[in-house]
View 1 (cartoon, rainbow, N blue to C red):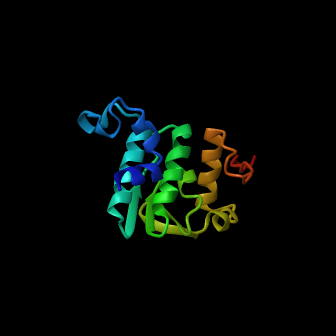
View 2 (view 1 turned 120 degrees about the horizontal axis):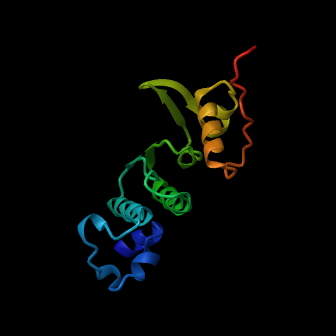
View 3 (view 1 turned 90 degrees about the horizontal axis):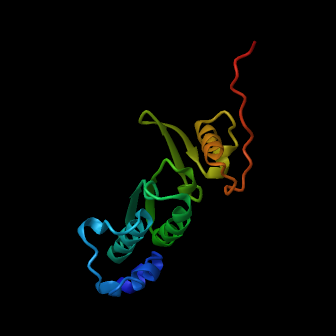
Length: 154
Protein backbone atom coordinates (compact mmCIF):
# COMPACT_ATOMS: atom_id res chain seq x y z
CA UNK A 1 0.00 0.00 0.00
CA UNK A 2 2.86 2.42 0.84
CA UNK A 3 4.65 1.81 -2.46
CA UNK A 4 1.44 2.23 -4.45
CA UNK A 5 0.70 5.53 -2.68
CA UNK A 6 4.25 6.72 -3.34
CA UNK A 7 3.93 5.79 -7.01
CA UNK A 8 0.70 7.79 -7.24
CA UNK A 9 2.40 10.75 -5.54
CA UNK A 10 5.46 10.52 -7.84
CA UNK A 11 7.64 9.82 -4.79
CA UNK A 12 8.63 6.22 -5.61
CA UNK A 13 11.33 7.24 -8.07
CA UNK A 14 13.41 9.32 -5.65
CA UNK A 15 12.71 7.01 -2.69
CA UNK A 16 13.97 4.02 -4.69
CA UNK A 17 17.21 5.91 -5.38
CA UNK A 18 17.93 6.46 -1.66
CA UNK A 19 20.78 4.33 -0.21
CA UNK A 20 18.39 1.93 1.52
CA UNK A 21 15.29 2.70 -0.54
CA UNK A 22 12.17 2.70 1.59
CA UNK A 23 14.24 1.69 4.65
CA UNK A 24 16.45 4.80 4.56
CA UNK A 25 16.50 6.86 7.77
CA UNK A 26 15.67 10.39 6.67
CA UNK A 27 16.37 12.37 9.84
CA UNK A 28 14.40 15.08 11.58
CA UNK A 29 11.38 16.20 9.51
CA UNK A 30 12.95 14.89 6.30
CA UNK A 31 15.41 17.80 6.29
CA UNK A 32 17.55 16.08 3.66
CA UNK A 33 14.72 16.16 1.14
CA UNK A 34 13.85 19.04 -1.16
CA UNK A 35 10.58 20.90 -0.65
CA UNK A 36 9.05 19.04 -3.58
CA UNK A 37 10.12 15.66 -2.23
CA UNK A 38 8.63 16.44 1.20
CA UNK A 39 5.40 17.54 -0.48
CA UNK A 40 5.18 14.30 -2.47
CA UNK A 41 5.69 12.24 0.70
CA UNK A 42 2.91 14.23 2.39
CA UNK A 43 0.67 13.55 -0.61
CA UNK A 44 1.48 9.82 -0.40
CA UNK A 45 0.49 9.87 3.29
CA UNK A 46 -2.81 11.50 2.36
CA UNK A 47 -3.43 8.85 -0.31
CA UNK A 48 -2.85 6.07 2.25
CA UNK A 49 -5.40 7.63 4.62
CA UNK A 50 -7.97 7.83 1.79
CA UNK A 51 -9.84 10.82 3.22
CA UNK A 52 -13.28 11.69 1.87
CA UNK A 53 -12.23 15.34 2.05
CA UNK A 54 -8.67 16.42 1.27
CA UNK A 55 -7.59 19.89 2.43
CA UNK A 56 -4.52 21.34 0.73
CA UNK A 57 -3.18 24.53 2.32
CA UNK A 58 -0.54 26.16 0.09
CA UNK A 59 0.58 22.71 -1.07
CA UNK A 60 3.04 24.09 -3.66
CA UNK A 61 4.26 27.19 -1.83
CA UNK A 62 7.64 25.77 -0.76
CA UNK A 63 8.75 24.51 -4.15
CA UNK A 64 10.10 25.91 -7.38
CA UNK A 65 8.13 26.05 -10.61
CA UNK A 66 9.73 22.85 -12.00
CA UNK A 67 8.94 20.94 -8.82
CA UNK A 68 5.45 22.41 -8.83
CA UNK A 69 4.59 20.61 -12.07
CA UNK A 70 5.41 17.23 -10.53
CA UNK A 71 3.66 18.01 -7.25
CA UNK A 72 0.62 19.37 -9.09
CA UNK A 73 0.34 16.12 -11.06
CA UNK A 74 0.52 14.22 -7.76
CA UNK A 75 -2.14 16.48 -6.25
CA UNK A 76 -4.37 15.90 -9.26
CA UNK A 77 -4.08 12.15 -8.68
CA UNK A 78 -4.66 12.45 -4.93
CA UNK A 79 -7.73 14.65 -5.49
CA UNK A 80 -9.42 12.20 -7.85
CA UNK A 81 -12.79 10.90 -6.61
CA UNK A 82 -12.82 13.02 -3.46
CA UNK A 83 -13.80 16.49 -2.38
CA UNK A 84 -10.69 18.66 -2.30
CA UNK A 85 -10.42 22.09 -0.74
CA UNK A 86 -7.34 23.92 -1.98
CA UNK A 87 -6.08 27.11 -0.36
CA UNK A 88 -3.58 28.75 -2.67
CA UNK A 89 -1.87 31.94 -3.72
CA UNK A 90 -0.26 30.24 -6.73
CA UNK A 91 -3.16 30.31 -9.10
CA UNK A 92 -1.77 27.56 -11.30
CA UNK A 93 -2.65 25.10 -8.52
CA UNK A 94 -6.36 25.91 -8.69
CA UNK A 95 -6.80 26.40 -12.42
CA UNK A 96 -8.55 23.02 -12.92
CA UNK A 97 -10.84 23.35 -9.90
CA UNK A 98 -14.56 22.78 -10.41
CA UNK A 99 -15.25 25.91 -8.39
CA UNK A 100 -12.90 28.71 -7.37
CA UNK A 101 -13.90 30.96 -4.49
CA UNK A 102 -12.11 34.32 -4.37
CA UNK A 103 -11.89 36.00 -0.98
CA UNK A 104 -10.83 39.52 -0.11
CA UNK A 105 -10.34 40.31 3.57
CA UNK A 106 -12.27 37.17 4.48
CA UNK A 107 -15.28 37.99 2.31
CA UNK A 108 -16.48 36.20 -0.81
CA UNK A 109 -16.06 38.49 -3.82
CA UNK A 110 -16.19 36.04 -6.75
CA UNK A 111 -16.95 32.42 -7.48
CA UNK A 112 -16.80 30.27 -10.61
CA UNK A 113 -14.49 28.27 -12.83
CA UNK A 114 -11.13 29.57 -14.02
CA UNK A 115 -12.59 30.31 -17.44
CA UNK A 116 -15.73 32.02 -16.16
CA UNK A 117 -13.79 34.18 -13.71
CA UNK A 118 -11.43 35.31 -16.48
CA UNK A 119 -14.41 36.61 -18.46
CA UNK A 120 -14.83 39.47 -15.97
CA UNK A 121 -11.90 41.70 -16.92
CA UNK A 122 -12.71 43.99 -13.98
CA UNK A 123 -12.76 41.13 -11.47
CA UNK A 124 -10.26 40.42 -8.73
CA UNK A 125 -9.43 36.94 -10.04
CA UNK A 126 -8.68 38.33 -13.50
CA UNK A 127 -6.37 40.91 -11.92
CA UNK A 128 -4.60 38.28 -9.82
CA UNK A 129 -4.07 35.97 -12.80
CA UNK A 130 -2.79 38.90 -14.84
CA UNK A 131 -0.40 40.04 -12.10
CA UNK A 132 0.93 36.54 -11.51
CA UNK A 133 1.44 35.89 -15.20
CA UNK A 134 3.41 39.11 -15.49
CA UNK A 135 5.58 38.45 -12.44
CA UNK A 136 6.36 34.87 -13.46
CA UNK A 137 6.51 35.44 -17.20
CA UNK A 138 3.93 32.65 -17.23
CA UNK A 139 2.60 31.44 -20.54
CA UNK A 140 1.67 27.93 -19.34
CA UNK A 141 -1.90 28.96 -18.61
CA UNK A 142 -2.86 28.79 -22.26
CA UNK A 143 -4.87 31.98 -21.81
CA UNK A 144 -3.42 35.25 -22.93
CA UNK A 145 -4.46 37.92 -20.50
CA UNK A 146 -3.88 41.45 -21.76
CA UNK A 147 -2.20 43.91 -19.43
CA UNK A 148 -4.75 46.20 -17.85
CA UNK A 149 -4.08 49.90 -18.10
CA UNK A 150 -4.04 51.32 -14.60
CA UNK A 151 -2.54 54.70 -15.34
CA UNK A 152 -4.43 57.73 -14.09
CA UNK A 153 -6.13 59.87 -16.72
CA UNK A 154 -4.21 63.09 -17.51
